[in-house]
Length: 334
Image (cartoon, rainbow, N blue to C red; front, top):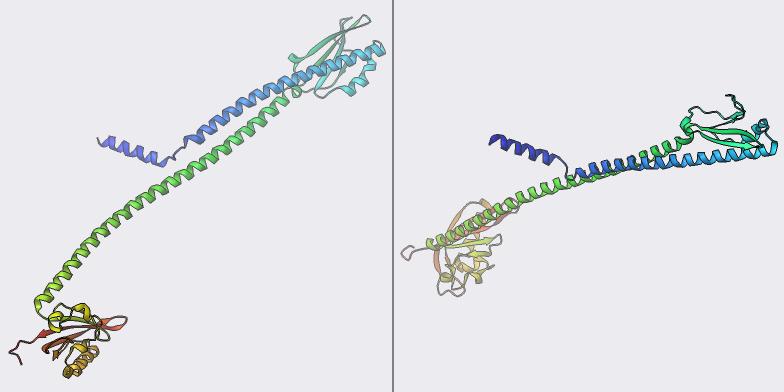
């Protein structure tokens, strides 16, 4: 079981390391090379055939020239040397022998070759006024095989060069595709991680929201259970929040008291004391306490309370506001 798992893991790693579509450039190189060799062989064969046909035409031309010169000058072969030498093509040897006597010495021999191809020698028998002679042409390898070799190598080099160009181009495209796939996999992995983080943050957000709601509900319940008036003031002393007990004390809805200076809810005789308490909290940044009476715009009578006030500080702005608690005094308390 363990060895099977290891082999599967190794195969997966090897497969991951190989580029996708790597077989394409290999096929292009093999097919291109094979076609280049095949076409080069065929073209070389055709070139050799054409070269041989051209050689045959040269042989016939020389034979006709020899025949014409013999008719013009009789059978004096020595007079053929100059015109034939001018007409002799390269890489070809011309030999004229007499057939009237047995001798190995030719009547005329022109041209020099380095690599004679004896199996391609062409012979033509002439009979001029009863004098028989044999015209023999012998080609050099350069005449028959050189064009074929040039064609073969030209096509091979061109074909293999194009195949290599296509191979490297397709190899580069495979590498680009592999890089794009790696990037896509990496991005998918990162996207999955980010989605998981977002899901975790959403869960944390829900938990924090629930905790905030619970804390808000708990604070509201504690405020209501305490029986005290709770309020928050801005740095100018205006109400930004006030508990529901304000409706019983001031006969106004808490929302109607928003942005109202809290000093207006203090009895006229105690407003100076409230101002001093506010300034003391601002200066000392500590809790201050004062006994005073609260009276609303629509309240029928003032209500004596014990006011506790504390300043809210901010590292940037300094005093950001105030938080206060007003505990209603019992009727038996002076």
